[in-house]
Amino acid sequence: MSDLLLTQEDGILWASINRAERGGSISRALADAYVAAVSRVREDSTLKGLIWTSESPRVFSGGVDLKTPEGMAEAEVGPYRIAIVRDMLDATTACPRPIVTMARGRMLGLAFMNALLTDRIVADETASFQLPEVRIGIASPFAAAIVESTTSKGLAYDICMSARAVPARELERRGGPCTLVPADQLREAAVERLETLAAMPAEAFGYMKRWFMSSRLEAMTAALDHSRIPSRG
Image (cartoon, rainbow, N blue to C red; front, side, top):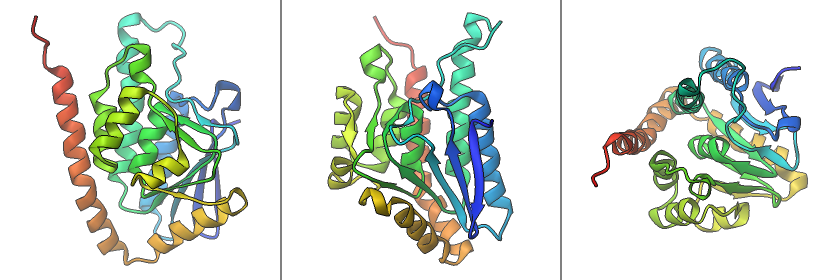
């Protein structure tokens, strides 16, 4: 069975992570399927947009799959994982059509970064968001740039430096792109949000989306450049 289940309903393409046995981790195959789904939305004008979600009610996604493909050299592992991250985020940021994240359960790492770059996160009370990188010894200005450019510097500092899980209610209260709804209204609310965005004239919506995304892309590029600067001493 596919790592990403695709269904179409009333003009909306649903892309649902289907890796509960691996904690919803984002594999190469899952990332490729997501990129293909976003491309389908871009190319098919009969589709209203895409809703990204997970089959698991407890863990939306644990982030990038850390399992090393058999036979891969150690030197290739880092670039391999970075490519998964970049391909998925590039697809999201380049899409001129609406993408809504329907969130429940825990969302970590790449999944959280990608959700922040969609047009809205619609979540229930079970949803929480976390960037645990610093806790495991990974410095990620790139992740910090995404959080800061989509929320605020103060919230980005808190999320990235504490590595704690932030409940959906707090993310919404502190200005994150999140709408909290009761669990029994989650699907309906996600559809309503996407249809509201899809009802806008496509050309104008895409133009404005590119404008808002431009500052986020600049911040992400600056973070990558900073990461390449050799440390002194």
